[in-house]
Amino acid sequence: MAKARPELVDYFASEFCQLGVVEVKHFFGGWQFRCGGKQFAAYIRDTLYFRVDAELRAALEARGSEPFWYDKQGKIVTVTGYQSAPDSALDDGDELLLWAARAIEVK
Image 1 (cartoon, helix red, strand yellow):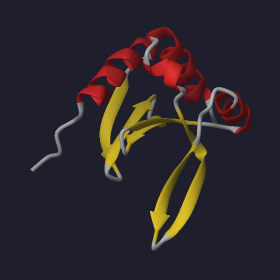
Image 2 (cartoon, helix red, strand yellow; image 1 turned 30 degrees about the vertical axis):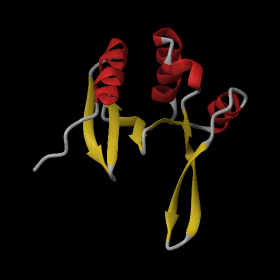
Image 3 (tube, helix red, strand yellow; image 1 turned 90 degrees about the horizontal axis):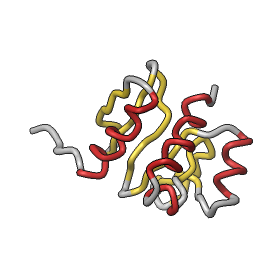
């Protein structure tokens, strides 16, 4: 049975579609967002993460963002290529799109 998409995933997808054609696919227990064939965001464990480079990571960290992490056999593994969306962006569609647009540009 296919996993039902959470309402927030549908909301993010509808917002991100303003930036281009966006695909949403199941991804490691969560959902990935792709634009132009490239993943730029993921929704995992009730958190939206953006793909980042060093510059975008620093900008997001300044807004209270944290890196994606997971537990592997009792050890925390931090994935520095993804940072959480700032809380303020979750309440402001324009800000959400600004961060998403920057994430789409990450090489």
